[in-house]
Length: 334
Ligand code: ATP
Ligand code: LTN
Image (cartoon, rainbow, N blue to C red; front, side, top):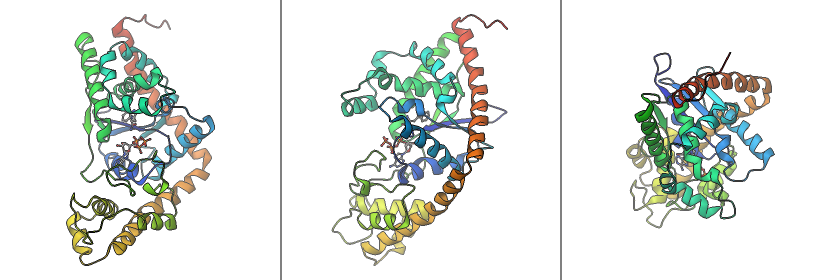
């Protein structure tokens, strides 16, 4: 609790270009939650370096992501939007929590196994302890809720385990966070393979709609989307390509799958694809315009970066000092 409000923490990595999946599954929900919680939305650049990054590209993408948070509708006056690397408490608490985390627990993390298999030339210790840094992110702000995708649930579980282990020794230091999993249908699948989720690291650019894609690109990608040979527009698991298009349509238009199926009754797949494209364009167009305006206002964004990092650091330091005291680090002499 901060000022009587429940606290929410979430973060996103600035690796790759954000997709419609990231927007509909994460960012859009964040905007809706911002009214009900004291929210911290971090650009988790420290997590990004667990795989090699080009410094100039990382810097550019981190700024673009923070700007996108605002363009998507998260008010930076009411919510704390900041770079993880600007608040040193994340690294400090992560070190302490490392000493309360077991190798066996980290060995079970499926994301570590996946990423280690993908980057065999760079299986570094940071990749292994990634979940501990994530636990530090969440626990520093005493977060009550953490909106995450299903893929991050295992990391949230380990966060809870670490917090409970610490509290069992030192008393009630950390709030035990709960996951907030968004509405059903928020998992957007690849346009080229509806069995896979739409992902910003997909090598096929036609598989994903990027948030900055122009209208013609969106129309082209939708037209190329993989469907099936059934010919009927129904919302069912047996037709995953069509179901995904309907999910996108519904998430963008606010309609229910039943309403959408009725609307497309008797239509061909071409008509469905065109309607999906127009619904996506209607959502992304204002976001893109706002992003371009904000991008030009360097002073405004710089101000947000500075003041929000100060706010975040203030809260983070309160938790950190308490933890340091509990574990027996010497008090600072003033
Ligand atoms: P990467 O390809 O680099 O693993 P990603 O596109 O899968 O990235 P993440 O950075 O892992 O995305 O996730 C950022 C947020 O977006 C998370 O909250 C995640 O649950 C959500 N998200 C990612 N992909 C989708 C998707 N296809 N549908 C819905 N939500 C998604
Ligand atoms: N691991 C997450 C990003 C992330 C995060 C967090 C999410 C880092 N720290 C704290 C929620 C809370 C991801 O890859 N999506």
